[in-house]
Image (cartoon, rainbow, N blue to C red; front, top):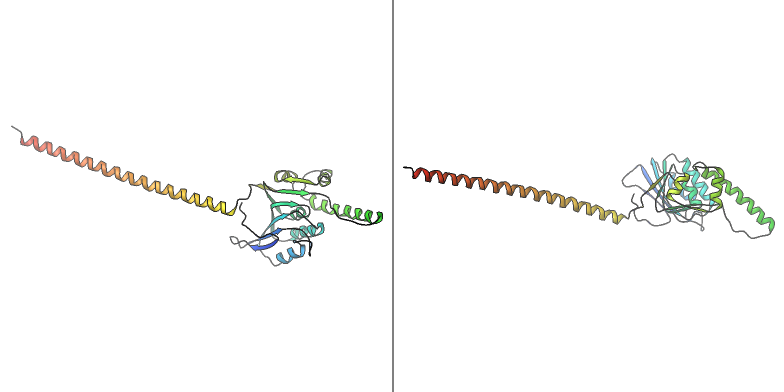
Length: 247
């Protein structure tokens, strides 16, 4: 798998090699307005007019607004195209919820996914803080529901992962069902070009060696032919000499 160099933040493009596939890059903070770079409104504006059969969503984010994450997750789930999420680096918090909206999740072996409970900052008296705590519990239930469709395990195991703010390697994420496929680390585009050039050089050298081998074979055939001709001349000379010296 190879990823071309791109600008961070939010980016939408069409796959040049496949007209039936659109590519969406979600790199940055999940949230709307001044707070974030990735919003459900932005994703919807980009994908509503897309009629591609496949959508490839690249994710690299530490998370952000849980509500935006859930909204994007639900939008991707309802999109008629086949959606594949590819983790480019970090897929944490609200970003991991977005990944749950894809039909397929791919993680290169050097990427990470993180899940945890909802968090917020609060200021106020005991009543206000208790109210905030109750809201966070409700948000946690929303997050758990987003993960449940994929999670392989018991409900208490999922809650334990959230309690401990769990960072997962690609293979660990796959074991829990958060990821469908683990691939080799992404190669740099220039590295792939170098490999391609090296392969072409090897093929060129191989062809040159083949031509050299053919040329050598032709030279050997010519030498053999000359030797045969010289032997025939020598035999004719000896025969003629013997004829001339007969008594």
